[in-house]
Image (cartoon, rainbow, N blue to C red; front, side, top):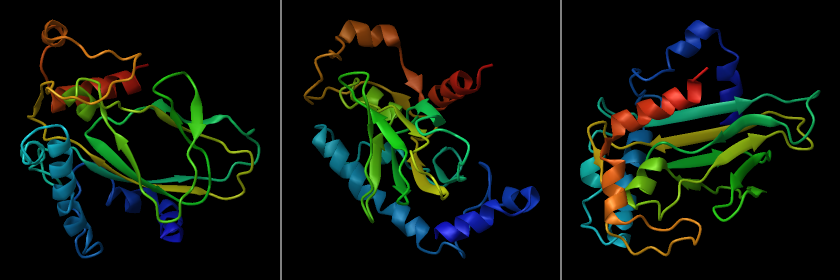
Length: 224
């Protein structure tokens, strides 16, 4: 799988563009089980909704267009080339958080992925678990839970020894573009540094749609 990604990255730009971007059609013939795997997210959406004290179909109604127009979910294949002249600890991908509901990441055995503690400024290296999937809550889920379920900051740094490429596959689940975020009444234990907002504070923040939230994050990320 990782060798296939290396081969893909070595193709001419014109060839790679056919399978890159937002408006491409999912290659069901090449990935016959991928759509069914995405459909299995139904159980995850139900579990999250019930865990937050909501009807089991609450999140299903907000993700009806997965893999179709009107939803910006994306499947990412990332290859970090070997580094020989860069010192360990330097940044390869700066601090960021997921914009959507949650994201799934699978990486090879090369280290470098770090997450920021919700209690301090400390960054911790995420270990490698063969066959493991890292699940990151995103900004959308943080908004729905009124910041009780935190969107973790993460980054990729150059490890001390990096003789090989680093590969990551990520499926980033976004709400439908027309979904509006409204804080739910939940009872998740909250970190002491992040007090739950009162109803008046919620109103001051206003209601934001998934589309406008994503556009704002893009502007922040790519502002010159």
